[in-house]
Length: 517
Image (tube, rainbow, N blue to C red; front, top):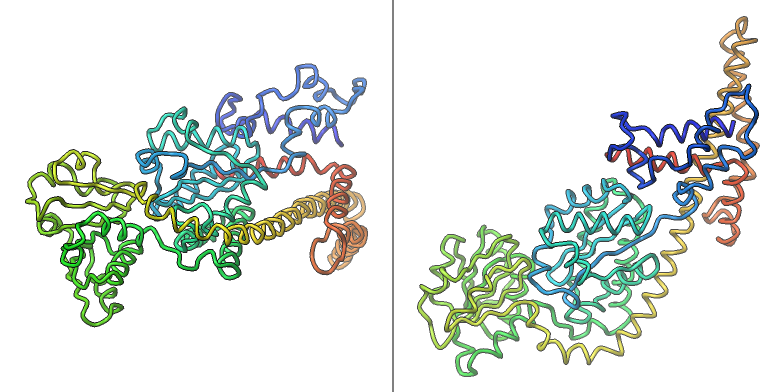
């Protein structure tokens, strides 16, 4: 039985739907396994007929010793490939950025890569991080990096020069710290938690179990860190830091009378408006695609605050009179270029552009003009430096919470390991039962009535269920069994060996990747 199953699996892995072993669509290539996982002699042994002398080593054992084995023995790895404001320049991050509407497509493309089972993308103005569950972390990292390069046009070597790579526990810890705001430019800011929630929402429609679970637990960690420590007390956001930066760059006497233009009324733009009002600016122009969003913001403002809406096609006309221009849109191309700005009359000594968009809304060429001062998210570091120092103690307290939540996630993930074993064991025993009943019926069932045949089916199923009751009881990781997780995992490994379920697990991974293709 073992020889025939090993032979079937080896043939399945050596074939493709185009019957071309070198094709990239073959199951073998999908897992990065060489087209001949065993040597020629091993393949010949698999093909021995029953009349020939049996091999000294079973085909199954040979298969286990081959390179294929690591895909059944090793647990898939959680990997994060990331670039952030701390490791990569803005011009690189903006090329890698993925708008929220494009996240489902990006996740689907990542999951279709040969060694990637699950994926998520966290793309903000300060970071671009890709979280994956990889069959092989080396091959998975290579495939994801090539995907990033192809999508952004940035050479792989440049990405590798600025990236950071974290695996398993370190990757978990990192996301939890990100969700808590410990890696934000503004320590403890709350917007990153909303962005993590946004990614989690995109993962609700069949994108796996482990990575969605990771983001779910990251949200819990982020909430606890803010609720149980003072890390978010007095915290500023990127938007408030942008307002503070602009006001420090204006002459003190002109700050209150400066004409403010806000381009974009999304979450970031709305926060800019709120902080301008808090700083005493009671009149501003807001350019946006739709008037409804601006009207909604106006309703939230106190009386005496005037927000003037202008459509996007009047942006340059509005910019003529503005002293400070804040930009925060999702545009993939710059809204202000050198040729746009050089024709605008200066309202004073200089016009300030504070661009908190990624990709940038203000082209870098604008800074070459006399009288134009351009600031982006990377220029906000000086504004938030003191704020960061004030909450260093609270960050240490938050770290303890993150460590606790990380351990809970790892325990939850460990408990998932028994699920495939339970499914494969039931599937294998059902296959054996059905084959045995069919063989019996072909010999003795010709004269049986339908009721008797059904009774035999019910009897054999009941027998299998009773036999499996003990093993299944020792694989449960729920509240019904008070058993330590290490003991449960030892039971799982023993059952995998006794019932030769490793090949079943490998077949399932191959089948999943073929369905994704």
